[in-house]
Length: 197
Length: 407
Image (tube, rainbow over all chains, first blue to last red; front, top):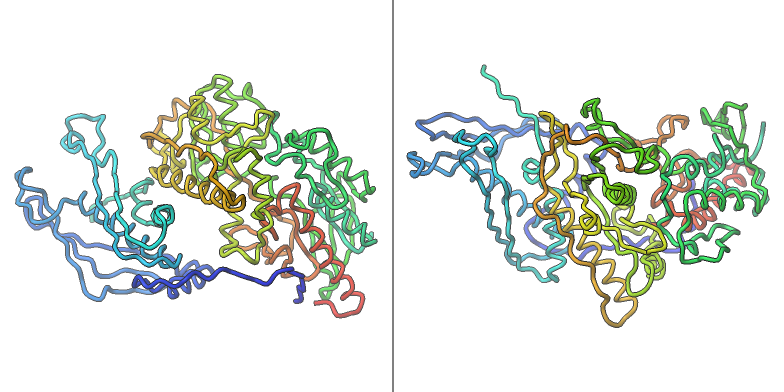
């Protein structure tokens, strides 16, 4: 096929300056291009296996997942303990599950900040985030049916040191939210089905 | 019936193509299923005006010549203007002729264009059926109970059509305009806000489109932007045309009592659920607006204009009882479809496959789609340069066919 359309200009897709934030950005760009033409391979499944230990203490093991049309394992299995604090008359053998949700949100957004910054050629010197989730436990205790169990609000505050103007840093943080799995998981409803084997 | 080129659609794009072909003495016909500028006549609400000022009506061989170059045309005025354009060069339009199938001829030679008024054989085809014809309703619409009346922005005409409390879904030009006039007519209005592009109507004393034209933003080309798919998906600007020249952004809607909520995410337990992502979306739109205004300041070279206030969203509810919503207005964009095109020309996202309007099928080109070849490609003012370039390509194709070297 011949197109021969006079463009009047040479093609100048702007190449961003390179930034080394430890993100393999070329691999990610390649994956995006490859998966655009192979949508089935883009379907992943993440898994976790939980065992009750004692009281409110349980342990979750994370090892295998599926994606790219295949089964995979993490480099090694990971375990995370969850429990409730002593003021709840528990033994505090680990963070509470809602705190792990906050950790998941921050971890996801920070991964996004590093990826978006690298994609835009911005080198990061430091990135820290503090996360606060407000919860009225009248919900989980069944005191007031008008109070929801989960967070009523979540606030994330980033402090980012990078060699670009503040507006550019803010734009990176916005884009990170647009591409974040956990941000979407928290801000949008998901059908959850729990059954007994 | 035989001709060199069949143009499908007699709106701004089809007529611009016809004018370029006429200038090149190329034998062609323009097939129009209804009447010239039909979408402008039949699918627009009463108060709608163009988002661009009248002087931005530069079509091939035709331009606005009225007395109000800074004003904004109504849909009826656009239809009359396109009628005058058609008559100015006696465009060979066949109205009331709906295309039912386009197939390549045997051996890849030419095209067979079937219509409900006979079959045309041509050497090239120009698809100019428009980008704003078929309103898109998201899948969540099927989950709404029958008690909620659903209207698309192609069906909406005026506030008295709408009873009770209203949820407007979508906050681009259509959504903000409809939410604004419903609120001003006394309806209680909630607007569900997804991705949007915020701009002021005027900046530093001139229309925002004057600046976007001046700084060259509207002329940015499809083969020069870093991510053309994303650029083509960009929603229309939050703007309204009218003599007041007012800015119609989310803060303006809040000021007339419209309640802002996040993107409509689902329906469950008799409630509409809204995404908690609204703060991120308005922050993104504020930053993007600032980048545009920075570019304008750089172009001017001195000083900095007064910037619009940051968007205030407060603490928007993430769920509302559907019992309190009588009407949902879908202002969720348009998704053109081409069921009459040959297989393989539309990708899995429902988008026409093309590179600057040139499809993989030699001799078949498209015109008038968002960012086809320029950021302004789908504007009344932007289809002209695209038409000139693509009709030159069509003529080269006809030359290759004549020389026996096509494809």
